[in-house]
Image (cartoon, rainbow, N blue to C red; front, top):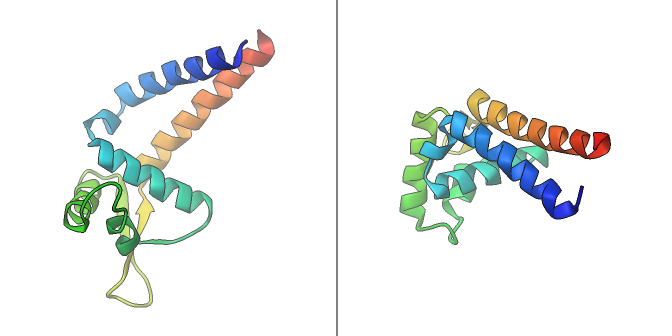
Length: 117
């Protein structure tokens, strides 16, 4: 299987996952914010809310702060208080972890088809 075909097969599977979840109901900025949190968790880094609201390439701090609260209300993230009660950290919720796990399964299926084909 050519590399482009491999990637396109993954996109096809990922799109089916995205359509079957509430992912498409998220604003593209919210999707980028979730990806940022997912990468940080993968790197075992805690993400303060301040880091999310500081992603200036995605929008103003006020708009990003509103998106943080929207993501929490939609069930995609959780806010945890650490040692300092004034600072909250963002974590992926079970819904978000399930979504990213399903995308990982898409990659796995695509690669298995490559080996089998």
